Length: 329
Image 1: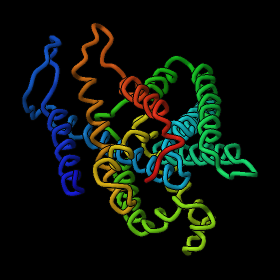
Image 2: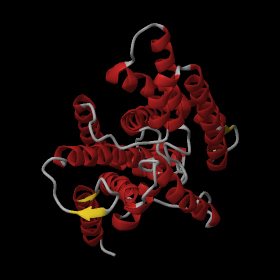
Image 3: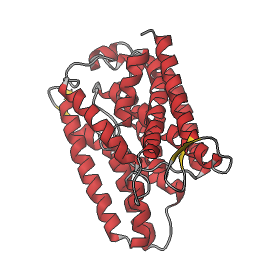
């Protein structure tokens, strides 16, 4: 497939998913209907904006991490960034409740960014060997452990909260697409996404060079230390924004970059914005599936469950095919 054809396919897929999300709905009786509703228009559009923002942020974070670590299995979820952000928000919520206050949107974003950054730095520290540097398998194993610890910490904080406070945090932890998001969060997400695309275009050649060995990348003029820190911060902020907005979501940041590379190639100046489109389409599609699947008396299925059920087999398929050993951007 040509790169132009890949862009067309990604754009059409996103447009189809957005159209389905805006037009599909369930009546009060539970029947599935198709049509535009003026009364629910603002809610549906807000849900689309939330899903597009979170999906694009996760996929771009995954693309940056895969490029920096030379690991096709790297993603915000696999490396524990989502779990770190979730744990940080849970701890902040518990502390704020005990202090008689609230975290707030800005506070959630700040602590989520710190939690995501700490998780990623921890994975990089324990996923390194003296002989080979960053090891793909060790990174994934470190990410599994960090995610497990972070998830346990978040669960503990939820258990220590009273039921009235626990319900909201639990629903957020399962993943949800808000239909009435904080507008300031959408503005922050849009600004971060635009900045990430701009940075990707600016860093494109350096990110491509980082696919080579450290010595080869350095010989091409890449400052590996500064680039790695820049990527760590960018990926952490993107993962934190998505987590603060929609909760911890699995595998969007893993599948989105691979779909983008398959469509437009591996050069980061093309692949990074393509990953944003692919990630946005994937999460909007997951929200559409959430509407299609009826749950008698239980409301709607959490979108995080759908992402895990769909992304889990994709992750196992990549492992089965030896993606950690045979991959080039």
